[in-house]
Length: 187
Image (cartoon, rainbow, N blue to C red; front, side, top):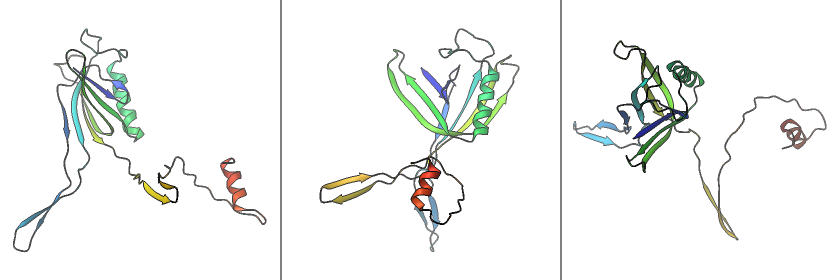
């Protein structure tokens, strides 16, 4: 049994298949004597592709534990994710038929593209194909080990939470610490 979540939205029907492809960014270099050398590099971003059906009606086999939503709501959600240009969670929850957890996939992704198909075979249900790409935060977290007389400790850089693009012209007699306190609200 599978449950698929796109940005906390449970898909009403489980896709027949999900493809998660993972490629390395290796290069092949041709040597002087026409030999080849494989330059090994790190793994690239994973690509996830699948197709799912959005039912027009609340059939008995539809997973509606989080409430039934019509296809229009799911399509609007996909459009918002595309326009927002922000990563979101993609979760595949796998369970044994007994209900015991098997294993889960949980990763941040971006919505690369989606395609909506209306077909006669599906009547009023809508078929959607999506392509997601794994998202990795570009800000590297570097841990730095510092040692002193008392022992060693690890420092971690603070993440940037807000960037303020502001210019302040100083006046005679002002100190930098006063300006910073005034502009940041006393922090």
